[in-house]
Length: 206
Image (cartoon, rainbow, N blue to C red):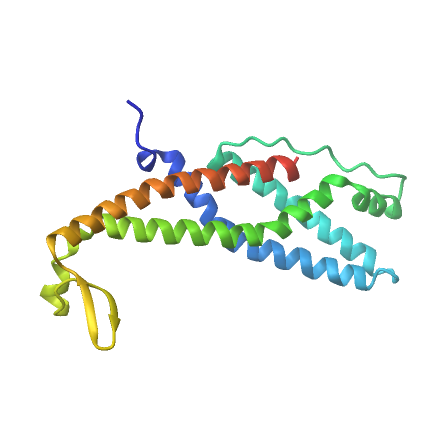
């Protein structure tokens, strides 16, 4: 008999990966966009090209960290790209090699896309897990509301002075069942989002 997904370490590692996407996405997106825009805006001067090199070089370093994170939390072993080859000796050759390397620009695209993916993954994972677990465990803490809050149960909604509480036995049971179903659905949502993130890592970080 297979272990339920909610009890496996894989599900929670994938959840952690999705949650970390948001703060890391904010940092990587801000870095790449700021340097890319500044570098393009000053590309006609000597300053622009080194800034663009810093943009893609930083993205390449971030990609190395992301490969390690994907390996640890998603079980996805993405091979590192080949080292950057300078087109000719000297500083200008190095700049040309950095800006002409496809892996660097794929890493920059990954850093850019991590923010919208992070917003989506973080929002779905945190919201669905929180609501599902709270609803599934509602029978265990229903007593808190009449004992300490003065409500017959959790206040579901209020309209024109009329409030509805989850207080009857059928309502409590239905809430628990709905929570269990949502938890089961959440494991599949996390699995699907993690599969998308694996594909993103394979496509852009190698």
